[in-house]
Image (cartoon, rainbow, N blue to C red; front, side, top):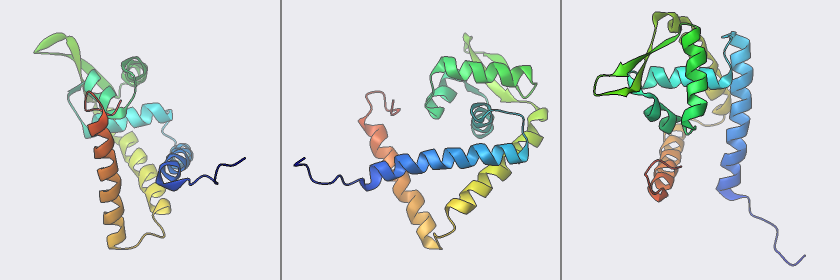
Length: 153
């Protein structure tokens, strides 16, 4: 073959890192015993971060299809962890809120996330952590700008 060896560069490094972080998160969730799937835990976390938003807004923020999110929300609602209410400005749309029953699970999810983050950043010291976050956010923002709808999908 006449092609030069591939340069994995930052793109493949981040793809690999994302998969590794997901595996670590799955293992950490099992350790804290939430009883939730990774998708459900992630959905609960996003509802916590973005309370009172429409389902479509949550799906966009999570980069999942609306029907995928509906499955997670159905399960979380059945477990009494969230409730959906009609949006006063559009009765067809649903607003998603946490219930108090979600609090203990959110604490466990936070413990799992913090543990994964701490292990992943063990070798990154001081100001380098802030620089890393800034650079990754800049990359994300750049990709969002490339999207026709500004959502990176």
